[in-house]
Image (tube, rainbow, N blue to C red; front, side, top):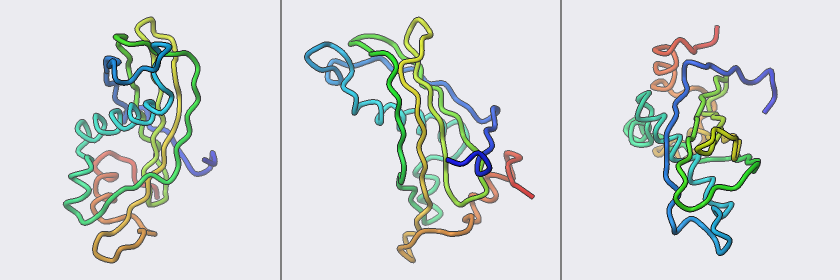
Length: 149
């Protein structure tokens, strides 16, 4: 992600807690690395509920938002039974896409995992990727003071 392409907006941030389930740990009793992508999704879903941008909201306008890029950096392990906090931050960009950064912390407030995702808008009817901001997304950005000049 190029610095000129993004602008973090601290006001569009949400924290969401999860408890590590038994099914998410490996034989070493630590969260298997692939589950962090699922935790990022839980963070995006919490964000969508808080800011009226859920997958179902997007679908009602005829769009899907598939992920085209995921970046993860693991710092510390999480273990079965621990409560973790997923902080999901919307990254504002001029492009017709959704970008989020994530920071997952453990119960002691230590960073466990960080990352980012990028999603594009695909139109169900035309079966192609939107190159311009869909109208509903433009309205959403305007509502939150995120529309670029």
